[in-house]
Amino acid sequence: MNPELVEKIATSVLYEGYILYPYRASAIKNRQRWNFGTLYPSSYAEAQVGTDAWSSQTECLVVAGEGCEVCLKVRFLHFQSREAGELISPQSGISGEEPQYRVVEALEVDGRRFQTWQEAVERDVTTPALKFSELLAAPRTVAFDFPKMRAWEVVSGAAGPAGVVVITQHAVEGSLEISAERLPGGVFRLRAGLKNLTPLDQSFTNDQEAASLRSLISAHTILHVQQGEFISLLEPAEEHREAVAGCRNIGVFPVLVGAEGEHDTLLSSPIILYDYPQVAPESAGDFFDGTEMDEMLTLRVMTLTDEEKREMRHGDERARQILERTELMPQEQLMKVHGAMRNLRPRAAAPSAPQTEKKA
Image (cartoon, rainbow, N blue to C red; front, side):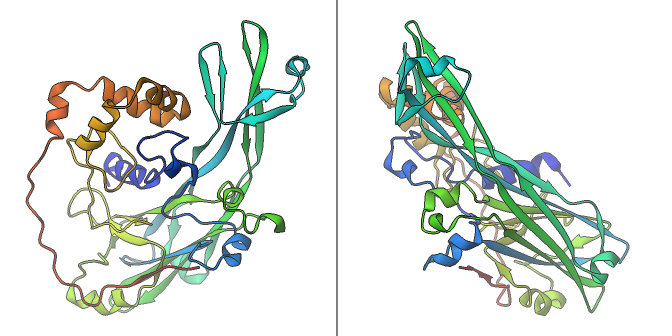
């Protein structure tokens, strides 16, 4: 496995749709947060008419012996709210207790800007190495939880306390259940079910914002096998087509990742990918948009007004990085993203490839 290559692809999946051009919190498209692979609390998902999910399922095939081991790593974003507030009473900012405040879209203090925004914390859950013999005997469940947190900081100016920034993170809970089934020909079907088990008050079952703060955002799983090989679900050998057709994936698309030809690592992605996806070498960094054209977005960022850039710089840390990277981009780097020709890889037909379902 090439850890750096795998991590780069997985991180691109993790932040897909996190914040979109024009990369400002005030932009309409960024007010209603959305991401691929969101697993909501079950009570919220079940109250919706659409396809909002609270669980996903990965099924894949592995050629391995019973003594071989597999390790899984779940990654997702955990949103937390950052509120900018004006102090109701200036004296409340120096008492040592959380001050009383009114939430504002943005707080301006002596030329500094503090933006109300939902920002993300990266989470990961890694299983121990699991032998196939153990998984054949009984499923293995790995439970996880990340606790709630609340913190605040008083913002002072020349005239004294002027506002407050409050960070609130709600708890999330979940589980990953792993099992294995023996198939003919030394093949195992490996199953991994990921669930969001976070309790949600009944009053929030129709509140998308409250639910998203308790969700597993952009959830995906990296599977790595030692002394074994994953079978491509997109281009399986003839003898494995029937078994591949029996794999049932819900909300995810498992693909081989790493260097071309390696079969020891699989990425179960909420986004449709081919085997061995790569980030374009010309790209200097992510723009969080799967349909992105680096040159177009770079030029658009360059044409933002000073006020728009100021909001972008103070709204989100990753948006600030995009702005700084764009402003410092040398001409030769811009020319690299102007266009590149690559050979198109022919894709063999796979009529028996497994379907991936959406689960409400």
